[in-house]
Image (cartoon, rainbow, N blue to C red; front, side, top):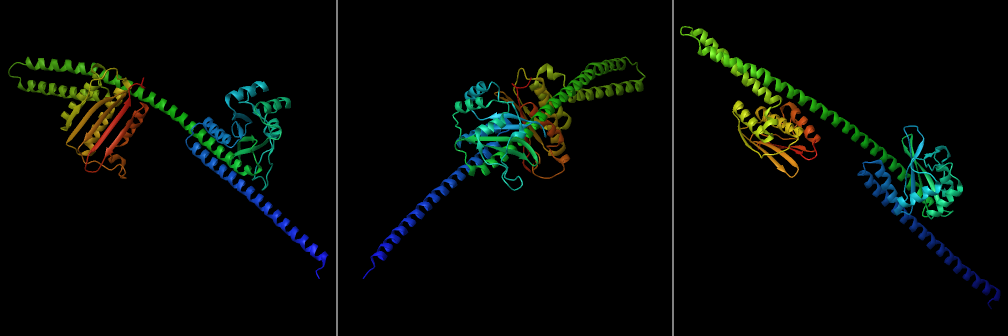
Length: 449
């Protein structure tokens, strides 16, 4: 016979086994859900890190870097404030807080002070640093403690009002993350929000490091831009001074030396005409002297054209360029076809830049291109003026590593490129071996004083 007690124990053991398996199954499912949630959160953070990296690659200004970070953290249900150091070892100053402008004004009204520009007591901040002595210096804390450290001197009652105004509760978590560049503490990023989790801290530490590097890059870009602006101003002043001096020398050669030599030639010609018969040798000498003066006058004319053509201000850019092409063709035997348009009110800096460009381009054609024919064209499209010089010479490959003195785009054209960039334009070189070279210079007419 079956023992009733053993039968009951058997049923009880079986029931307990079913309960234990159900309990384990429930625990396993809960753990799986927890792990899935953690992986989903981690995936979201990684995506956010990737987006901020993209933003930071195209944000040249520190303010834009911090705004991009704040926008991405708001997607995660988090807010942030950033305090930056002034110099290598200066105090921290609150530079950004990711509240909406209207909300920020309300908060500042409650606190009775402007938050941006507020000094931060760095020694009171408890920072999360996973690399500090191999241990986490701190985990999350409540937002009130973090704000009290971040904004010293502000009463706790005022901070509680702020929490009520921006809808954060007493159990809202916060963390202060160091923004380091090597050993230098560039600043601190304080992050808070109802969605902040302990598992987010390593990823948020990457946010802080990424932001520190982006801010430093933006600072360097801004510094380079400022220095480049100063350099461009100095170059512009130098070019203007050079052109003024060339104009002065050209005017003196044309007005003083040119007129004096012209008067001398007239006198020599009159003397030669008045020489009586029988003085053939003396007449020949006067003729030679007159021819020498005429050659000198031509040389002075070409020199004044190279320095600063007096006709540039008198007859305009188009006719000046056409006249220079004719003179250059006469001197060199090069066939130059010019086509241009009449323009009014071309700024002086633009006119002289195009004139210098034509000088340099035609000189390079003679020196390097071995061309037979050159086409020069002056065109205007909307607010942009363009001058092209195209030859049928031997051409060259822009990628060929030939000595720079042998290239058509030599140091002279490199200087021209800088000059046209100052005028809001550019200098383009299009060339292939055996197919000639085309140079195109452009400048903005409206933006140049």
